[in-house]
Image 1: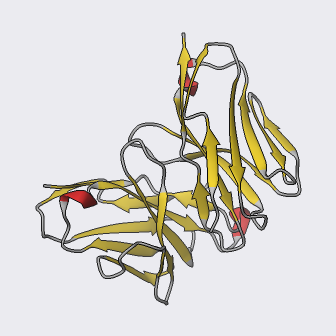
Image 2: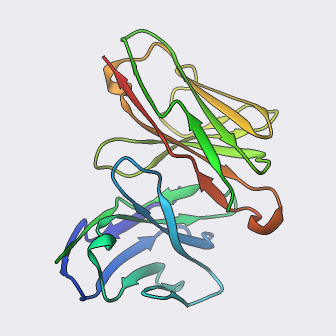
Length: 111
Length: 118
């Protein structure tokens, strides 16, 4: 089955700086890559996603890049704010619509 | 966006009892729902895929006789944890996949159910 690896496991950044989280996947059939933000005790919240026919996507301070050849994708958050502090999960999905999640990254934005 | 609810949001039960968790798609029909389990400070792990009108398919290592899934309608799937034990204490989250409309084939997560087995 699909294996998604995510790094780093924790990330502390100064407010205003950028945060980058990287993920790799193993199944070349995966074609959809969402990123989720989860606050303690809450449901995962989709923040951005990218499909395999696109290399980059941006939504305000959040951007995602995908390298299909290398099977890796990254989340970039610019101008971080304290409310960006949360756990972020990358995921991949193939034709069966099952999501495989990375282990998560705890992001702390220092004021 | 599409809305998914779960009930109950929190449940505490004694060891050996069974607990039923409901997952509902409120404003769309979902032929497929997924059940995840999340232990503290860990990722979401897919337990099973629930298909309306047919048997659920379970991921490797998940006991189908312990985690009973019923998807009797296009808007409701239930997960029953049978003979619960403390090691079953976890955060259970469902997601529902849309069949059509503006969010075709997208998944929407429920708010989760915190199960504590004493």
